[in-house]
Amino acid sequence: MVLPQTSYVVDAQGQKIFVQVTVQDWENLVNELTRLENLLAFKAKLKDAFREVRQIKRGEIQGISLSDLIDEL
Image 1: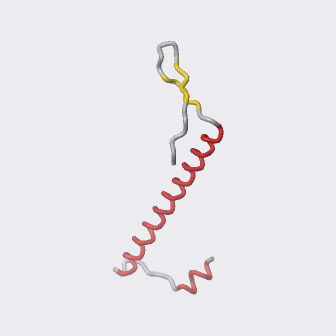
Image 2: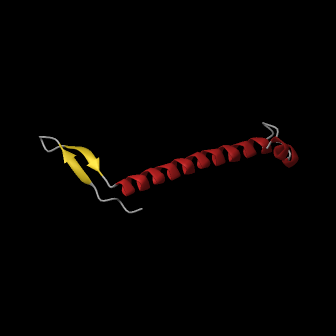
Image 3: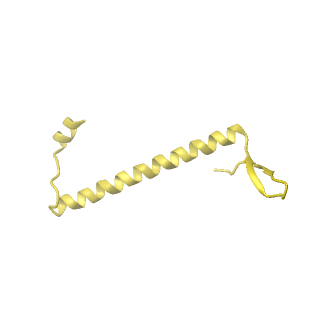
């Protein structure tokens, strides 16, 4: 992703207090943030799934059959 062109609003001391971007750039940033949040959520679920598989293999928890899984859906 290319960083958007930005403008800054500064206070009387010259300190940056706001950032201005175009609406299109803002929407692109929000979409990218949403995509990354979804990716992180998927990664966490996948990590949990692999942890559960290890627990099933060690006999710590009981797995379910594919038919039971499909029935749950």
